[in-house]
Every structure is written in structure tokens, then in C-alpha cells.
Image 1 (tube, rainbow, N blue to C red):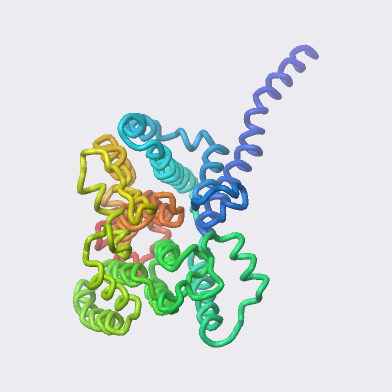
Image 2: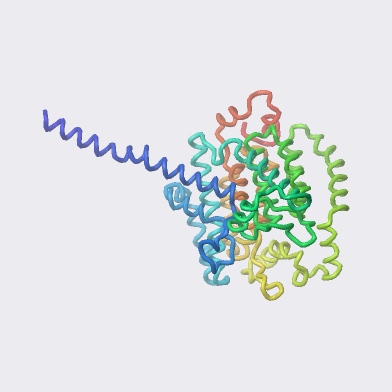
Length: 419
């Protein structure tokens, strides 16, 4: 009896070890990985020169790469996505420039991992971004932009030690208006005004996705941010976000009626915008040739790789020093990965974007357009904004989120959600 009891206890203890790891170490790794992604979402810009003084690049993705290493069981769960990346990297290594494969890696790995992590968390009834965090981050970001505006134009309100710290931590952070005339506005804690617009729209999209009934408050906050930010990117993103909010409504006539005052407001803003006037003057002087007009650099980064598809993209130099690397996930994959790159992207969208189960589809399309065309593929806020729309909830979770009689739930049903 004693031997039997000893054997039973030993076997039971041996079997308990994996369970013990499952209840301790695995949840700890998962929580840490999630925390790293959330940190990259809230604070995406970090001055890598503090680690490597010789580096001249902004590296926004390192915490997410570390998170992917911490939870390999989640990183490797979608095997077909990984298999389809092999020909993409092979094409880049054989025919593209020496750094193309690395750029592809920092565009592919964060999206692949964040999609897997989001799916894993939702399967267990949890969200990647904690509730209300994006909304509060948006409020803080806009308030800080207001403080910067007062700092630049009225009197100092930001402590010098905070400005000095941000200049060290955030790449290209400026203690004065971003250019000498001050017409480009403020940058929050981003690296430049256009980057601030991309971060702010990511906060807005996630905040609306978490609580669709507050989308008009979020839109108002983003409109205030545009008045402070003054970048062309912010204006374009405001138009996209407004259209997404309007067409996500169950009242189909509302978008058409709202287009009239919205068009008038945008026209007045364009007429009074010093930033757009500067762009117009530069176009008159330099023309529309993007090799001579730096203002069109972003358009060249978006469309040059697509123009040469399926040939491998060879980035030109602007002014002999600025290399026109692809802007957006789609130009990156088609430019350096050619047909295999496009196949990988189509698979990812097909695998994770079931149209009849996506909530607030117009806003999901806005999130997709931002990541696919308008920002660097490793900007984690844009990656997160797309993934929270792509990975659907279960029907039970969707029913709980949209109780009967809620306008947003009705909008969800009317735009092709799960039934």
C-alpha cells in the first residue's frame, strides 16, 4: 500500500508540473507580452540612439518583437502565414536591395503576431487593449497638444524638465514649433506632426471600436486635434474618420446630409490653412515632379512601388540623400516581395477579415487604408487599430457588447455584422 501510494503521488506530482507551469509561467509571459504591445500602442516612438548612438532610424517595433519571443506558442500558431512568408523573403534576398528583407520582416512580424495575440485573447474573452485606455490616451494626447499650442504661442506651461526629457526619449521631438513659421502646429509626444496624426487616429479607431456609441465624441476630439496639429495628414485622416463614422450609422440618409456642412467646413479650413498654402507655393515653384518637390515625397513612397509591380522596386534618391523607401504595407509587400508579397497580404486579409462578422465595417476599412497606404508598416498603433477590427468576436460576446435597443448594435447589424 505504501509503494502504491508513493507511486501514485509521484505520478500525480509529475503530471502536475505542466499544469503548474500553465497556471504560473505561461500567464505571466502572456501578460508581459500583452503589456509590451499596449506600451507600443500608447508610446510608439523611442529614440534608439540612446541604445545605439550611431543609429539614425526610428525603431517602433522592438517591444513587439520581444513580446513575440516571449510567447512562441502564440507567434507560431498561424503556420500558413509563416509558410507564405518564405517566398516573400526569398524574392527580397535574391532581387531586392540588401535591406529589403529586414524592412519586410519589421512589416510582417508585428502584424502577424498582433493578429495572433488578439485572436488568442478574444478566444478567452479578453481584449488586447484594455477598455477605455485608447479613449483616455486620445484625451491626454489632445490636451497635451493644447498645452504645446499655448507653450508656443502664448506663455510657457510645460515644465522645462519634461521638454528636455521628451527631446531625449522621442526621436525628432522639438521644443519649438516644428518649422520656423509655426504653421505646422504641434506633435504631441510623436516624432513629427504627421506621425502625431497617425497615432491619434489609431487611438480614435480603437476607442470607437471598444464603445461605438461614443464615436461622435471621439470624432469631435479628433477634429480639435486637427485644428492644433495643422498637418495635411491630419486633415485627410479627419475626412476618412468622419466618413467612417457617418456610414457606420444605421440612418442611411445621415451620411448624405452631413456631407454638405462637412464639405463646407473642410473648404473653409483649406482656404485658411497656411500649410496648404505652403504646399501650393512649392508646387508652383518646383512643379509636380516628386524628384524635385520634397512635399510629394510621401506620394512617391506610396505609389512608385505599386507603379512598377510585379517588378522589384528600386528606391530612388531624393536630393541625393533621401531614399524613397515604400510607405505603407501594400507598397512594401508588392515592391520588395512582388507576387509572393501580395499573396501573403491577401491570405492575411482573407483569413482574418470575414466581412459578415466585422463590426463597424466602414471604420475597419479606414483602419485598413491607414496601415496599407498611409504609414510605415511597423507603426504599432496602426497595426493594433487594424487588428481590433479584423479579428471578430464570438456571437455571444457581440450580443453582450451590443444590448437590445443600442443604436451602435443596430448599426452593426445594418452594416453586415454577424447574425
